[in-house]
Length: 117
Length: 280
Image 1 (cartoon, rainbow over the protein chains, first blue to last red):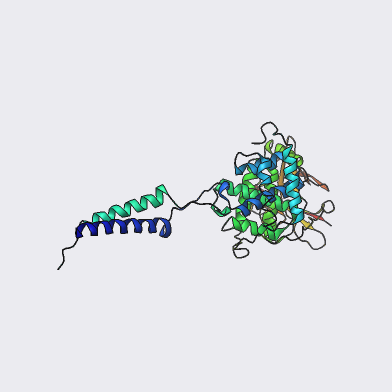
Image 2: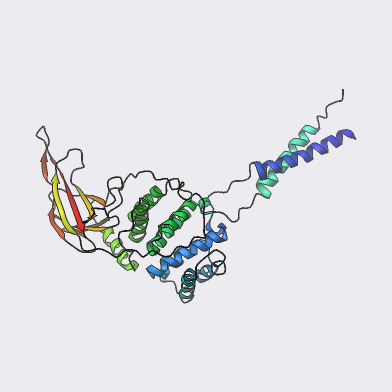
């Protein structure tokens, strides 16, 4: 009976050590991640950069291509996802206006042939 | 003396294996809220390009630097320069220009010219570049630049007022043009320096047009900051006449061709030309 207690204890200790090693000491390292995993503030800042560039370039196809790294949602939806986050991220009113302008323009945007996602 | 419970050893190993399997395979640590530094290389390139495009729009260098720091490049300047050259090679002149402009700004210079207001102009650049038949501008080897010391941590809150990008200056004028017989330089090398007249400060990001019978090549200053931030070069073929001018107007230098030179032992070789363009 005592022998099986040792076995059970060793088994449990093994599991515990394995989890400790796998989760804490040497967790799986993730590299080469896709932009969808970006933290919300980084994501919002990226979208703001796209809006800033769009203000000067006036190229909706290019803006849509830049936003497409966040997945297959419509560019307008991707751009608008930054709007609720903007105030808490410290975006200025003018930056929020840039974002809003990009969202509005993207709502009416149709991909040109071969240009957009 | 108690008998050692040998059966516990395989149980321990089995438990360890199960624990590791669960932690690494079945339920690995989930990555959410990652930083741009963890992105795949091509996504990082896209992120870097958008930073440069944003900088071209707002001229806010500190903010661009803090954004670049997020990518964790060991050498942000080199990353920008290299990507600018790749973009130029792939025909994306707009992106190449924006990346080169930001790379030059990182070297301590303000942007020299406003970004194009439309991609159409740069699309024309890309088209004409693709049609060229002369060897392209040589890639540079750049000097190291450590940005990690400048902005090691992302601080998203600073929102400085936009810095207006300076308007383009007066048209370029020819300051000097001289043939150089230097055996150590590549044959037919055309060296161009763009600088301001008043303080002789070099100007990066100036688009130059080199044309000849049947072809045209466009290139930018600032890709070889180790030589000069307003420096650009191209290789001229012997016995061909070239015209050189800045894309935003000014003097056109005509009939440029490599000078015939002689080495000390009497052998002949093609020399190079040094041109200095200035504007007020």
